[in-house]
Structures are given as C-alpha cells and as structure tokens.
Image (cartoon, rainbow, N blue to C red; front, side, top):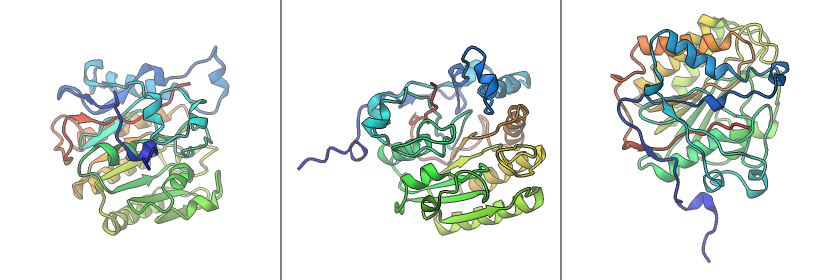
Length: 316
C-alpha cells in the first residue's frame, strides 16, 4: 500500500528559492504587521512590532530593503507537511525565514500551536513546520534542538515532537503561567521551570548551563531558537523580571554557545507584549552583528546549498 502521509514524501514547493549572497538571511514582510481598523490597539500583542524592529535596524544603518529576504506564500501542500486538512481550512499561507548558518525571522515562533490546533495568539505550528521541512529537504539535517526561551511553555511543538528522538527540546519558562500543559511537558528533554519575578543573574546562569548540557546530550544539526521577549520586566503575561540588557545578553550567549559548537541557528522572535520590545529586539540584533555572530562575514557552519528552506510567518 502506498503511504499517502504528506509528512513522509517530498513535494513540489516554492519555499526553496535561491538567495543571493547580497541578501542577509533575515526574513521579513510588511504583511507581518497586522491592522484591523485600529482594533489591534486593544490587543495585548503589539501586532506592529516586527515592522518597528526593521525600522530601528534601518535607522542604525545595519540593513536596507535590498539586504532583506522577502517571505513567500506557502501552498496548501506545504502546510499539510504539518497540518491536517481540517485545521488548514482555517489558515492562510504564511511567510518564511532562511537557514544559512544563521538566520533570523523577524516574526514567527508560534510555539503554542501544534499540528491540529492553535492557542495563545498562535495560528499555526511554524517551528514544527520548519524542522519537518529541514528533515525532508536538507541533506545532513537529521537531528534538531529547539531552545525555547519564551516566558511560556512551548506546548505546541512539544506535542508535535512527542516521542520523536530526532528532536531535543529545552524549554525555560515561568512555571505558574499559561499553558501549564502537563502532557506536553513529557516531551521536554531539558526542563527549566522558573518562579515569578526571576531576575537576570539567575536566569542567564540557568540558560547558559542548561544550553551547554543540552548540546552535549544531543549534538544537533540545527538549533531553532525561540527568543521571546515576554521575559522582560513588567510584562504582565510573562511574570518574569529580566532587564532589556539581560535579554540582549541572553541572545548573545545563545548564539555564542551554539556557534561555538559549529551548529547552524535559526532565531524567531516569538512573544513580547510591551511596546518597548521592538527596540530591544533591534538592539539584540545589532549586538549580535557587532560581535560577529551575524552579518555577511559571519562564517557559515551549514552544509546546505543556496536553495534553502524558509520559515513561515502567519498573517491573518
């Protein structure tokens, strides 16, 4: 009998486009920013933060439009790599981030959504989709590590990769807040549960120690880093007390540790519910560039060719 499972067979996809060397692997589309007659101002999520991040980076002369990778639409068949038809009917095609040794999707990180359901502002499972595309399409990518540092448990990708030994999940989150998904926690290989109001020193120490151990326990071919800024002090949904400088330092140490292991890293920006988070994300990207972790001269550690997969970003 033929296997009709779309997850187990390659398919024709427009997500694999040649990316010129003149373009950095930073993926963005103006359509990432959601507006609806001003009603978006009433929602706790800053739906325009991704555009603000890009504006700050342009102001600092780090980027221009010609240096960005424009995200492409995903077809129904692309999304069916992860999503059932029943759920796909409620989705619209998404956007993408590139993998070239390092990559940043200024958006994405919808870690509460699993293959058959959404949750927590998350429309569909972009992290799961990315990893499954890498496994399906990219030679040499057989093991992945998810480093989820959003303040909330990443129960979506945890449910999707439950029992999948190829995927190692490290999740650092406030133990007292949404989603509290006990079933999904069974998929976490390195679980770091934080208390209300955790501050910089304790947080950074735990992240660094556990990240080193995670990479030793399961040497991956790629790391997907969910870099939520809802750990920021004053974020009512995150409940932690990490300073802006602490977030910049966190991203720095993740890139430093992962790149030291010669592993490609894909960063998505995930949650962050204060207006100042866009500036913090931009400052972090500028810091990564200043330290040589990203940029045109940053050495590629990936075995991929230039026809690379892209990470999706959902736009209603």
